[in-house]
Length: 41
Image 1: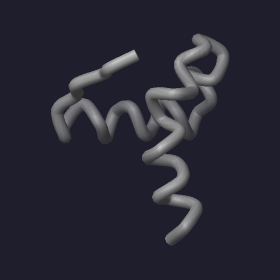
Image 2 (image 1 turned 90 degrees about the horizontal axis):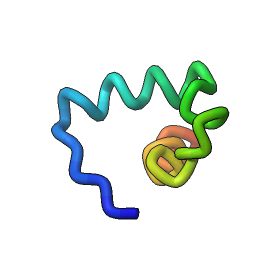
Image 3 (image 1 turned 180 degrees about the vertical axis):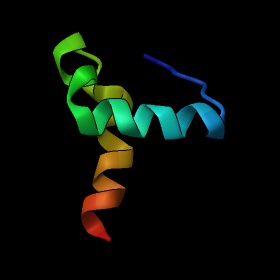
């Protein structure tokens, strides 16, 4: 799925992904790339 998000919304998405809320919603693909970037840091 294509997801166009603003950078401001991206920060909120980070928190949701980090909290695991997005995981349970089944939207892991939306934050898989950002999480990979964080893990690679």
